[in-house]
Amino acid sequence: MHIVDLDVPFPPNYGAAIDMYFRIRSLHALGVKIILHCFEYGREKAPRLNSYCEEVHYYHRKSILEFPFRQEPYIVYSRNNKELFDRLFADEYPVLLEGVHTCACLMDERYKQKSFYVRMHNVESEYYEHLTKATANPLTRMYYATEAERLKKFEENLSRAKVLFSVSERDHASLSAKYNHVEYVPPFIYNDVVDCKPGRGRYAIYHGNLGVEENRMAAKFLINEVFPGLKIPLMIVGTKASSLASRTKKYSNIDFVSSPVPNDLKDLIQNAQVHVLPTFQPTGIKHKLINSLFSGRFCVVNPPMVEDNGLAQFCHVANDAEEMRKIIRKLFTQDFTNEEIEKRKKILQNIYSNSKNAQKLVDIIFKGE
Image 1 (cartoon, helix red, strand yellow):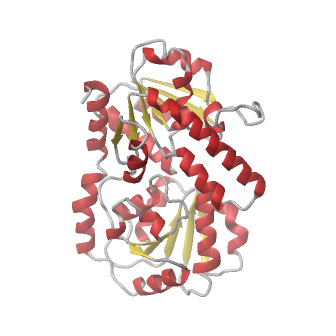
Image 2 (spheres, one colour; image 1 turned 120 degrees about the horizontal axis):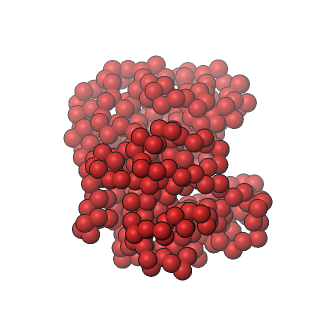
Image 3 (cartoon, helix red, strand yellow; image 1 turned 60 degrees about the vertical axis):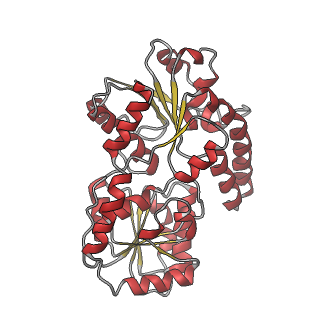
């Protein structure tokens, strides 16, 4: 089968890359032969992918400056590539498209020749509407609003795919209201075996891709509203975390680790006492929360982080900064128990099983089940 990734999926150090990379590995483990197509824009070619794929092809993602007045969403037309399309339509293998981002080929007149499947990473038009509301910069807000409207129009083309695979129960409900060919497949994750450590850690942690506006907002909320006055260390960890360095200098209890390698990130996650994970964007799936539940101790979240995803039972939910501070202080006096670990194993390992979810994809794509 062909898989078209919106980015180079290795290293798996942010949400979409984690989902894409471990899907590839899991499908390969089931014997699926993969022809992989990746778009390059800031991440290097990854020889590791050759271990799981028959072929790996890389394509340039266009800059917005190359085609500034197109009507298609930028995330789509920047990945519109004739060389890719010609490869896809040269055989009869099914195609898994990762995100609306890679769906420009559904507008090609040859689309009826192929069986296309789309892994939805978000309901993108809704995601960009949330970004519009959350952004203060007027030019950025205008871009997000324009992209949201263009995505609403473009998403009509998703009806040309045989099946859409939703990433969350919330997105499943939204997509099912518009399309009659939607299947829920939970995200593929870095580690689908619960391996939390009992006892206590020494610090709180927030981790995510700090190049993403949603995550920057969450980190700024913690820096400016939650941790000032708390005598508890906070680690802000992830891609481009150093971009927030100037905001942390005046607080002696806040530090950051920028772009850690996967093993270092896992150590930081496992050894923290509390994962403080607010979000102001209820769309999509929150890989940072799932990773924390599989490898970390206590999780403190706000309501949008656990909206309609069934994960609130494993978290401490705070409605505002003051409530979040109170919960964090309390949790730093408690041990994380083996009973809590067993509860997570019993429920989470069944839902977020990479092998089980890969088998579901195989059954639908190759067996028509």
